[in-house]
Length: 495
Image (tube, rainbow, N blue to C red):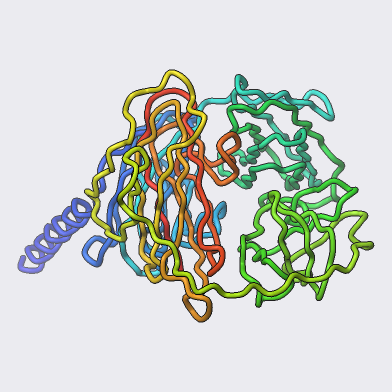
């Protein structure tokens, strides 16, 4: 009798403890389009959210840790068990984020569990987005030409897998047409996502059963052009069901040039001259390439986004493709830059009230106010020049630094990002910074390529930049073409 009472008491205490933990870890109810801040610590090592989903919805859940050493995990749970897990977003170079994209199998309630992959806890944001429904169509012809304009929605194509062969799918855009290309598997998982001014890109689809999905869109509201989709031959028999990857891990460039691609996931530094003694002026990542025009001391020189750059010819980190690569001339390196004694520029809060300068903050206060927008009235015409702001990042701060603002519609912002505390040598001479722009809108685009072509970044998209002593600032362009005004946050994290 005594043992039965003890067992019953133990069971009751366990239920109470479990209920207490679940209550403590309950993050709340999410709905499509929401982005919320939250925090994990030793007392709350996991947080649970729930949302109501509809069958065949393709949802994307994204979590970003506010400290560089905090690596969040995401778990998506449905009625039949786990639907997805992520401890690092494969679509960004960062380690402090996680992403799950999945097609919901049925109507019902789903759960999202946020945890930590490395036992480090900190603040984070988590967002729940749903992709607009797009009816997939089969590729009736080979090749198939697709017309893209500001009036055309994203276009989706069904790609049947071959049971015993790998297939190659190539996508080629007309010149100067910014392009966003995604490949999803049968469960809605994003296997590859590539965007920008890419002349062409190829994907290898694995052998297997079912259909993959190819989604094509141009993020620039002013661009018009055509896209050609080709189904290449098979690459041999096989039974692998692994995810597709871009062929040779790089894109495809015109054959009459020498294109230099990065072949490492983290990207390759671009410098102002042919050695590591020269300043870092950018980073070559993804399927972008340098158009090489010469070579010196084991380094290629050429143009990248209209700028003259140098990139290492080390075959372990770069690959050169094109007929002219074998005949590149040897060129004279530029002189090493003279270090200037002028101080690093910092932002001020005075000046024109129409161009306020919000400063960066390293606070993790979840109730941080959003600055008042500079112009709440909607202009009748799209402005010819942007409203300019400054976002100053501290070099020695590794936790999240945040810039908050609101952009009126229609309009565009230019946010100049600079870094304070960069020196000309030593540990403080460089800093890699990762950026995520969070917002709840479908009418905002942003990036670094200019106002009319702000790349393919949308809400909760990410990018990164490498800062050096003589390259300690760059600019974001943020654009809202139509619709309502949008409040947004630029979150910077760096190591």
